[in-house]
Length: 399
Image (cartoon, rainbow, N blue to C red; front, top):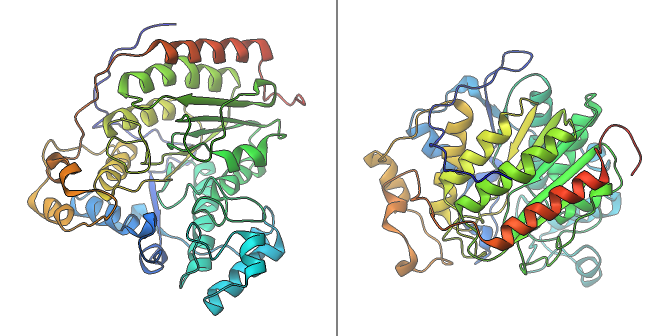
């Protein structure tokens, strides 16, 4: 394995044209601003609307690059989700409550997965966005759907703030579009357990998840290369050089060897330093670089959001991620209007003394410069060897 050196910030990447020569497309919906989680829920913070405001303030998004999302139909939802569960979600939204039996059966109406106005419509729009993103990717566009990434969702219950599993619909749309092999890369701090479960027995899908070890949902400790499942549980304090190392020495080789023809990325922001629900220490610069390197595989790609509970780090990360996709130059310092927007944000989960002043003044984080630990090198070596032993998966062989 080669040692990695830090690459420069991908601040002026030229978008790679697909078959249709399309530009990157930003997918959004007013539903994500209107239908808000209640009370002190971690997702009460403003996310989608803040990212939209910042990219528009910086002049990175015009009408031709923006697509409004429509909620997906109940019939389409039923391709992955239990009709009884879908009906329960609809009823919960219309009545504003659930019975004890429904709460216990479907895990809705809980502190984790509350009932709130617009709940069903918002979740259905999230799925609609991922389907639209995959269709755009097949047409040659790089599609960015920051409100996607609900990777914990199960067919018949809500899990981890996720009512449906929108990445699964993106993957299925790519497969239905004729792609022989699809890769799913999850960079969220929490294991992409729902997606892994749904595609564990699908020979045409490879799942790779980098997540914090000993972190909820306490899964993803083991890999199963024969079924195309690669889990990379990383220790607390996981930093930039370590992400570079794993992308270069694990993700890119495995995806290339599998000859993937399409890619879905879950780009959760909770892996960033300063997020209150994880102990990882990545800078947004390292994540922009990771996505840029994955895009260089040159296949139809869907870029989703995911977790993220610090509004200052999340907004700057996803806005800069859009800049990376769109070939925009990321400024060294933010203009006053952007700073004012960030100053006006609120979050009960991040104490005042823990708020880095640079979150209000610059787009790019200061890179985290700790060296690659031996445990990361050992993890990479074991997964590469396991992948080699399992042979190239994704050529139509049944695992």
